[in-house]
Length: 215
Image (cartoon, rainbow, N blue to C red; front, top):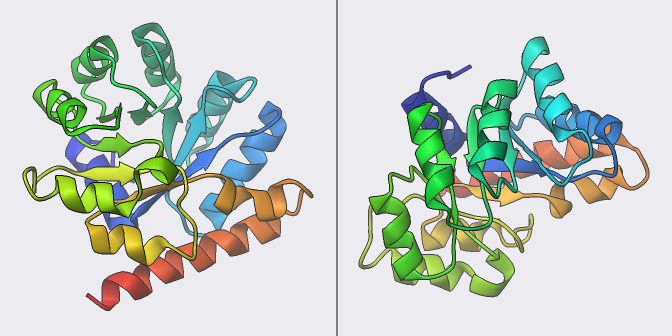
């Protein structure tokens, strides 16, 4: 498993997807994280909205397994706590310079949320490695395609509104990777069927391979 900053970014880019875990409690969150990883998705983002999220990071980091990240990180204090708990990358829905600073201090990839070209440029100037296009369902694939014109080197990961049915549109627009939450975990997460969650993860990985193979 990649541990250096460049290696982590490369691993996420090669996989093409980050599994976003939102859950009602720590047990469900850990089960979902393990299920998507068993289905072949190497990068798992545990959001800070999950009760006991830090404990999930600590436990799973000690066990090994997926490339663990922390999501919905809104402030530098939370970012530091997540990094010390074992998070290898940090994701946020917004652009916060102090979060980027703390991640750069620890040499941990940071993916801040952006919704405009101005925010994207600011994020890159602050040292962001990947930017999160959020909310994806509002921005749409056309946002990435348009932005990649003037900023072709930007690594953009849309989150929100990404599904198995529209993966091809996001990658055709130039997405570096995609973040998938509900479309990945809800089919089995609501009923507690973790094998269905793993199967959904496998279908997503197969679809990404198919899309990229057709380039």
